[in-house]
Length: 149
Image (cartoon, one colour):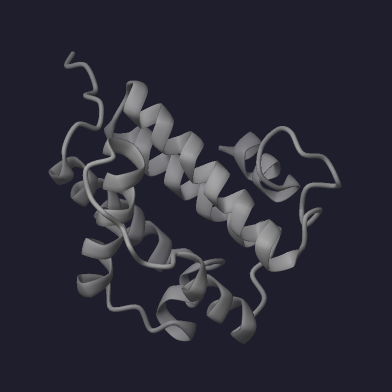
């Protein structure tokens, strides 16, 4: 049996992100944010998101965009909740775990959870979805989703 490789290149990120967004676009909870509300063009979106993750994991690319602004615009159109961010985290972790194992894969999962929590708190307030606690997993909804998986 072949060992699962760690994330170690831009190509790995491209494959991982394509897998993740295939699942996210098809998901009944968060898919409409991409398909109906934002009208995301995945072909143009993926290179920018890959730049973001390449910067986050490898520190090799300059990412000069505002990652928060598109989420704020979505939130204005239809509020993003703890359940939405929890589902995003679940799908992200599943995509990473399905392809990779190792320190960078773990960092990608931790970063995903941190980013989701930071976005949720910026959009909905510091206690949004966390029951007022600062530790642990993102929102209660994510805990519930994780326990089912």
